[in-house]
Length: 267
Length: 306
View 1 (tube, helix red, strand yellow):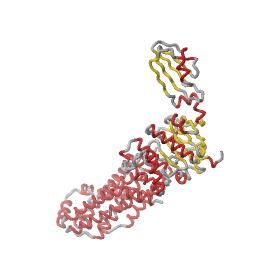
View 2: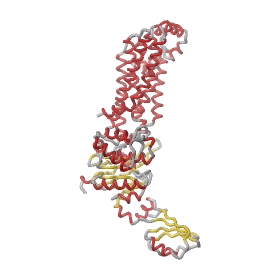
View 3: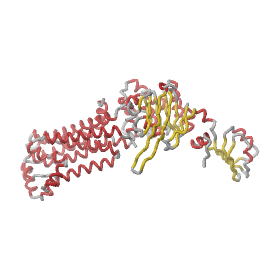
View 4: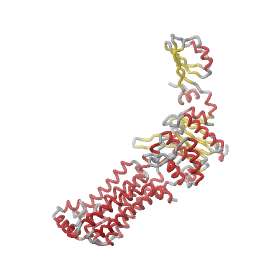
């Protein structure tokens, strides 16, 4: 029965949903309500004069895309939102086992009649619900921005942009849990997963700046490639990419369960 | 002793910690049996393997050899059903700082699918220990945190209590309350397995004691068998120089060393015979030191300490 674990995770950490969700929602609300279509066009024109490598580095893969409100939302918010959410996901992943293990709390919890896999799964489900809440708040921020501002973003694209945030966040969450289930120490987990995120972002950047076979292959190793905020803005949600990232998150989850089930706790 | 009366049974239970620097054996082929309805003391100096044994019994760590049966069930395969009937107090206790004592109790009760009776029991234990459950954990002293640990270890009336250094941080009056509670648990036919490095504590409440050193179980004895080794180290300073012969022949006195006006010796007998022997001497100062576990152990097994 993972219900009590899920409930406990939600009651303990619901504030995280508010902090992260409202923070991002207010940001997107400000962006959409404060900027007019004319300003967006002016901003796009300015960015056209940017060196491409610099524009790529700050997540602007195609300045032309900026000329539409949906494109502005994609490049001005969705391009770096997964980086912000990666920080949340690492923090959340550490809360599943690593924090309690390092603080010797896990000894107490695991002396209760609770299978290890239920503890892990229940907490991941709890954090997934919190992530859904954050994404929901971001969508609410977009709706409010759409209502208050003059930039008419597409409701459907806004929803798809939000849904597209889920798999990459869950991927980092489950990766963090899996690494924590293997190496235990918080600083080591943070370093490994943080490096993974930074390297992924860098590979995606390389693949867009240098167009050749090597960079193309390197780009495919980055989860940001499958996140593809610009593609979602132009063509809608890519279910193949969405399912691929969700599937990898599922593999990381299974890895975490396997590793945590068989190893020593609290050394 | 039949298998039903054995609450804990280990067979060649071993644990080797492997690190990058190499392997460290923490427990070597432990064969131990603890019977239903007894208070078993697990004695040993720090690093002897007491906590490793407890962590193996609770399936927090996995054995590298042998196995452990608790209530006749295998400790790894059946750990969840075992833990339903076990209460545990870790030696190094940490609890959720932001929660109140009552919230910690509620959390533990929900994990144990407890009802109102369990919460009422927790409240009763807290009252006996003088613990205020309304305070946040961060506001509790280390002794009060220990009390809260005891509450969540005992609230579900476990058939087996596993306590790692339970009285660390408890004041002497509360230690007596704790001892009384342990005796009550034994009288109800439940079992207590407690680790300690304090011989007095073990002598006060335990029926049997296992002595662990360097990861090996050296002996399992009834506590009464150890009591005859209950000696003290005595240092007496006199006003004038004294010879060792002043006390050498007193029954129970041994290992006498004379150093000017000071005598040092081991006393394993009655004080009045010693006091009679030195009644004509001018005593300036008397100091008595309780023997360490190691001293008791070496005496009991006739080993010579270098």
